[in-house]
Length: 478
Image (tube, rainbow, N blue to C red; front, side, top):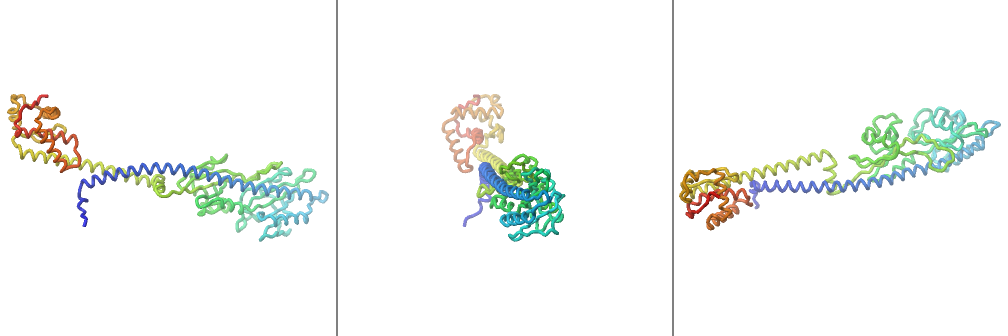
């Protein structure tokens, strides 16, 4: 059975803590480099994909608007040609029949209307389960105060007005279930240029919005907001059209405040933004036809902002690096742990080194005190006396032949003299061999490395062995 006594070994813990710190430091550097590389790669990929999705969205909107712009111009021209100037009225049966056939053949159209010059509906045909439902005269409504009628009144023949992207309103109330609509209108004029009414097509914006949402996938989302930050096409956990339904709290401002703050900078183009939840592209789009139309197109649906969201996914070490360095809380915890490992390693190393030094000095002093108690002077690596026997002066006088007064040396001078003699081979050869041999044997048994400071300490001890050498000739005045 393997014992667990090594856990009590201080050398084990010093080695373990140092290795742990170095390992964590290397891992940190590698994770940081990996995070920078993966972040750059993910950002470039997200920007490219977001751009493609945004372009597809704009093209889808333009394609839909182009088709319906030609339709509304065709119906407007037909209505003008069937206006009877003498009776000052339209050929309603003929126009109704044409509009009904058009609606049945156009699945994306929810409603077709013909309005008089004062805003009263003359014809309204609704789509109902794929069939045309002609509304009775008694149910027709006055739309004189609706903004899309006032917009179209001031336009010339051949022009188009595009309404807001909003919910359909009937009799002053939002229709339930909600119907997102875009209305294309074109004015009607008689031969004298007088305004005689307008043709309006209600386009099913829900179908277009669903097509836009389909551009997203498991890593991409497509959203739409207006300039107030209200959702038109919302994330799964948000409610679209909450602004028009007067349901507070569901908007971009509360969902992603930092992203909402960028709307004002996106009014003239697109902007890229990186958030903790992913990479975003904000682009202002105008819902209007791009086809070549002689007369101008006026669109109120130019307050729409497209948001393409890319969720950045990482795997393996890249996920670990992203989690550590992208989240400030995770980074702080990791940094504190790394710093604690460093402090523990440093303190453990210092304590072990000090313990080893003290034990070494104690063992050396004890060993030489037992062998030569009559003459002992021991210095540490800084030249300070750690043990002194006052018979040393007499011994050195006998060996060197010098006077006693000449031997009253400071401890630093004596240490320097001994060190000089050791380096210049002034000490007897056999004495040096004994010291080196003893030093190697001692350190091989007691420690795993030899420091220069420890060597100097041992040199300071050799004075105590002169009692046995009797060689003389030691020059203590280098």
